[in-house]
Image (cartoon, rainbow, N blue to C red):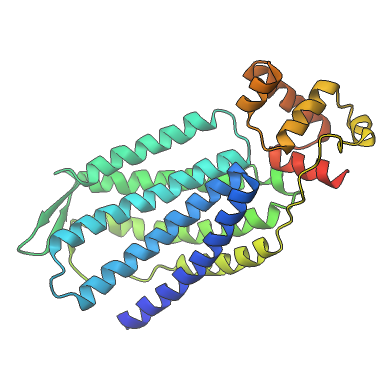
Length: 309
């Protein structure tokens, strides 16, 4: 049964790698920060599956698989699972253009670091090599609660401002992501009471079936199809921002310059340097442009300009 489960995970991982490869390709090609951040989330969850398969394979096939190796991989697995949540929060903050997103992301990253320290501290988990067991303490329970709270915040953040992308081509992408995350959340919710009661973990090759791997595989198939039909127009030339478009939205000469810089893939800092204005001024102009055109991100601005609508 364990061999079948490993084979299943390997198939899921192959689907994940295919979806990840094409997502990274488009992230590099478009230089979109949202796609880059999403690729990080997806890569981290793929790493979770890889670690699970590695643990099962080592237990079943390697006689010298030691309790210390199991202890180390188990701790890394918990940290990577936490990192998935932190990366997902950072991704969602960027997609929805939430204010103070860097501060919020840093706060959750700090929580992850603290929990990581707790896990590998004497109050978190102590390895008994001879008994091949890990004694779990208050640090482990704090980490479990911190992980669950972070997961809850991530899901609330995902569904809360969903209306901001409802009328864009990101809608199906985000709905698929949230369905995938919701299954993982329900899995975490059902296992949380047992995690809080557990005081001893014994070396075993069976860590339970990861049900979130099912929507992960389905979402991977969706992503492959989504990116195979991903539309990325050829960048506009400097004189291709039509007068009709400018008149329709009341775009000023300065705003036109900034839009063209955005089309070229320039960052806010690059735009400020090239136009000899402050970074705050660039952000103000972009805010005004977004308001006039009715968009909320660079991605939507580019789509609007290139469509000529």
